[in-house]
Length: 213
Image (cartoon, rainbow, N blue to C red; front, side, top):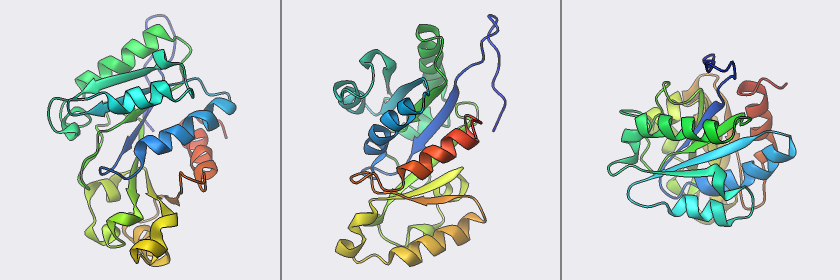
């Protein structure tokens, strides 16, 4: 992970964790699971959501009761959400800086990309670590398609594992093929409805992003 810069005050900037993936893969539901788990672990967090011309995900999180609504910012891309997380991440960089000014103790900012396809990736100017979320309902051939998001993410999360028997997906094969194409980079399986696998994801974040373990 890149070392983060110091402000002129001497305060270290918050770590920035990108969360990307196709529409409907469960990114917002995953954030709703991560927030209480991270807060319970004593992590000071904030959230940025991205979408085309709406703040719907931000509104959902603000109303959730899981986090101070003031700690959730919304970026409206006005174009493909991929643009503001990779091509020109200025809006997100500014949103993160504003959260850090308002909440000086914030340690981790979760940056959710608006739903995009398998090519969606994050700029390293914006994030220090990023995950790519896919769901089994999208088909067990997703790893074989070798999309940049699947291949390049710091961690690939295969979500909605509970749906596998209902959509004809061979979950074991999907996992094996994901591990094969990622050449040793981590692959995690989650079910946000039940919370399955979230503890492993939190452990990874604390170890690889926050260096707590």
